[in-house]
Length: 375
Image (cartoon, rainbow, N blue to C red):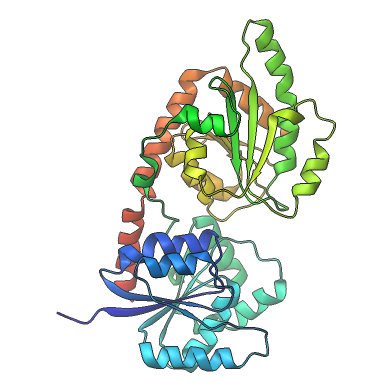
């Protein structure tokens, strides 16, 4: 039996995030065909423990500062001992570190997995351009990301491979007591629950969602005049530096008591199951894991009409797309869905089917396996 190819996956940290979760979803399933190991530059984090529990060895460089040259020697020793055929890097600091020192220490195949397009420091993009010749191939999640990087890095289409985020659809098929879960959050069985799962940071558009939700009270009042007494509840799942700003925004809102900031949670799948509509008002994304999970849960989704979301959602068929920074359009989209149960059902079924056919982890792992074999 031929020896498995050795793949070293280099990542900046192993806190909970999109790139980190992708490693956790895919590497255990790739382990049958390849000898995968993970190397973390800094910030050990909970994902490292979960990878090791899943049978993936994890190395830690424990980089303390930019002048910590010991981390470079520790990296050299890992490469010397493991002897990887390929290094795959994730997140910009690991991308640069891996291509420079990976090549220096004799690894001939360097794959850069670009996670989205949000890069706040342009000098890092300059370093990216100056060292691009060290990269064998780039993996991107979307055609949008590919086109942008082709322009910014002056690369040809042949230097890219599009492999989307993965989701294990089996994880979203389970039995649960929906009423009991709602009761844990003081939600009534007939409450209409609108949920947003996202870090509370700039660019995620939570302020527009809060504005739209405040507008919904007029819709709610009209429904109550029609002898309907269902309440709207907004669940904001996640935490971040914008929390205090958002709490201040709703201080004078009449809908304030129906907005629940519930922080970071380990039960997101269950929260999605007790929800009626999912909303992500983001201003920019790579490929949103939150959207994938909501769609896999069979929720009707409303999100923003940005190129990345356009690749994931067909407007009116697998979800609803609205303009960015437009609380009026967002409120109108919510009202339209609430007034049309058949449309909600169709969107739910279509989106769930779309995720199963194109984004299930088994399909994505097959694409990754083929790509790595070709290298």
